[in-house]
Image 1 (cartoon, rainbow, N blue to C red):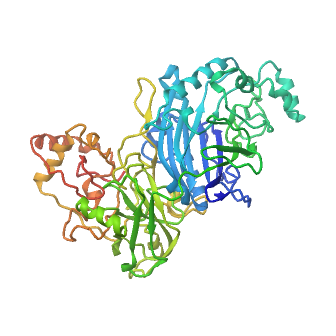
Image 2 (image 1 turned 135 degrees about the horizontal axis):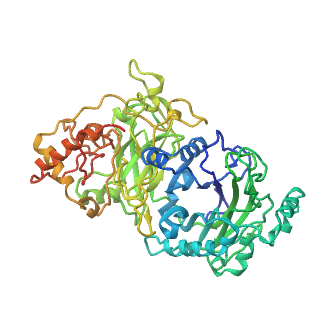
Length: 627
């Protein structure tokens, strides 16, 4: 960020909304995201709201196991610019993604998501709102992406649905439990407000002759901002771009079909500052402690994108505020270069009041990583030793962990260390980039330095940014909350290794999925332990009752630390794939799995911590394989 002083921060936030009309993504979105502009106000954060992403049954089934193509595109494009996906939420075709520069991650805390269905009276998610809220340098900010009812005569329904979304969405904690309780709210999406009264011929005449101001007073949202109490305090920049709906797909021509829909500004971006209300920031003004100043630097549409009948809209904001967080929750210290395995030592200190967890971990990331679980390797951030020993180490010189030699990438490259907090489901501390220069083993290829493996090893699924994840290994977990009646919660966004991860990326992003270097020993559990696991799987709610939250899994390699278990302990070195921790569609195994559970119904299993990828509550089959 551009620092106004030691205690005041100026952040540039870009907000994008786009109704993509079930289309496939284009090849490039750099201009939409205002990248490569050469401007000094490069964005610090980017929020992207999509509507009408293809959610037909075949696509939904696929997206339930793999990343949707739109999210994958934005991660591919943004990761070379050091943007990391902070959080994402999806409700059928409505998706919200929030990105930030990696060095801001420790100051983005208390991240939560929510969604509300309003379609078919609240029973369908084609309409409604999804939100991501978080603390940014101590200030509570909420991003709300909505898709409201269509058609000119549905203005009152749009008002009712927006009021429902504001009422239904509630967040955990005492600070900013409701959307309007946040210090700053960005409200955007396909809001579907239309132009009243005016004939379609006059509307097109005003557009062709660039006299858009004659249409503003008939815009339903402009009228509503002064008459609807629910919109009190919301601000919007001038509509100096042509209406963004409805176009013939593949062209810049307005609707030429038999319906000939009237052009309208359906796609909008607004913001609201919590009282005391502050308008557009004046140059040179500094906010007092706890007060925000927001200036809109840009508000425009992008006519160059023609895959949908809507044009995307982007806005750039300068947000100035007094920083309430001067230091990250965790400070990490590391050498400038690791040229020998014994140099892979990491020291870190936790700020007073930081809530650590036994499931916290430190990840090693290649520069250009895409999200917090896109690591090359990791170590647990604390041992299972006694609490007194831990407190003593904390008070003297901080804690120390070490990456094992087999966990380190070979070759030369730039890397970053990040401390992942299980309590906040976010990265609480990062380092500056540093070098790793280790000799490659005989017969290894240059790709070994990235930690990548063969396609067969890179065949697992990965759940993205799992909330309340108890380990760095993704899998099934508690999803974002949905406060709409009668329907089950959407099961989250999932990443998959794609053709782009194997060398056909549409942007110069680094390889994002790293495989397992080297051979990992298999594990052979006694039959009584196998049956014990089956019995444990039959106990409902055990993981849910755990104070640490739900468990998740991923294909990873456990790495050593000063408190590592002995090398001859096969449990600590187990390949998660041999433990069946990866999701699998194995219909032929159902009868066998049921038989295993029946045989083990009356047997117990000791509740010990098996490996980073197998926290308590795990009850998966041992025959699982990569999806």
